[in-house]
Amino acid sequence: MPPLNQFKRFDVRDLIRRGVEPFPEIRKRVDALKPDDGLIVVAPFLPSPLIEKLNSEGFLSKIERGNGADWIIYFWRETA
Image (cartoon, rainbow, N blue to C red; front, top):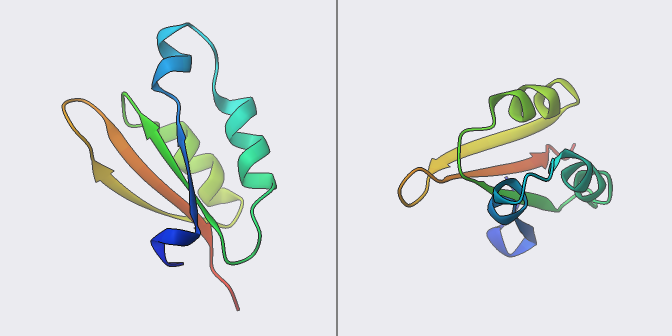
């Protein structure tokens, strides 16, 4: 896992509250990651389909419980 300072944070809670599908924005961010970078997604629920999708594309993930019902998911690619 890269150092935490190499992760970019993306909080999708407001998008979801407004009824906006966050996946296109998440997709842009993961596609733009450099080899030693990662993405932190903050969500109001555990986004299992997102985790499975990105894991199937070679991303590793770490899941943490946030405050209340929130979840914090770290995504990164293992460097060789």
